Image (cartoon, rainbow, N blue to C red; front, side):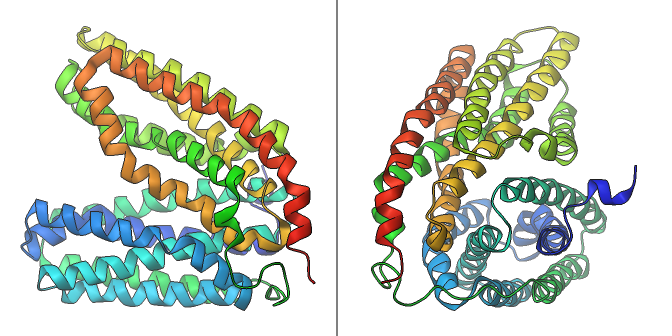
Length: 410
């Protein structure tokens, strides 16, 4: 198979793919070891780290939409370069953490920069990549993201084994360098002209008053809680409620990453309009319910049966994840006014941050506390939310003509 057949198209998609690989490689380096660095080397308690990152997550949540709007007014390429450089500076600052308040400031700055970068990148895809190719490009980028994080995590294992301050400092500096390299790569993207100043209602954020689109963001936030199943629910369930070995947690993580790398692009084929996007989301709802049911059935089973069922559940889960990602991209891009893709993609990208805040409470309440009934309950939640996306999407689509006319240049 020629290499070009597995690469995104030349131009902006390929540049974005290379930049994403470099960026995510750096993220995998640091985030794999960040908790150990902050507790073992800096000396914070686990509670201090958790509180600091929670506060930073809340602060970072408010960066998405303003960053998208600034990108509309200045140009997404230029803004993305700037926030990547800022993120690199905050990453270097981690090497000088000596108190909780310094850590909190750095964590807030780093997450604001990261969330802003994600929002602007999504808007840049919408403006620099044509129509239906947007979903395909996002699929490539998600595959590359998983590959980069996986490679970075593997390399970080060396530092974790050495477990010295110098080893962790090396990871921090290496991650900071990847931000600079990413910024340099982004400068090779085509310049996207800023939005005309006379568009719509001036500097105010139209996206925040688009109720149908806000409803879709809320629904997508609930669907994205499925990531918490993998990161929180499954590890706790395996250790506390099954006879499977603890190593199965690592097996499931590796299987999930491999499937996302290999099959995200394929799962996204044919997702190119609202109808096909909604269909993909409905599929994910059915698959999530089935996966949750199988996860729940692993409790109390013999060791070998539990292992097999966990693998089957994860295969179903990750298949649903692939459809959910593709469907959400199609909806997020397709229902945003073309002239305001920056702020709209900033708003839609908030759903992932909101899900990260909701997931610990929802997953531990349903899964850890209620066993099989809890697993089925969260699966039914996913199913209902997935099928609600159709009528809400049609509501948003019906609202497009009036909204698009309102944001045309005066």
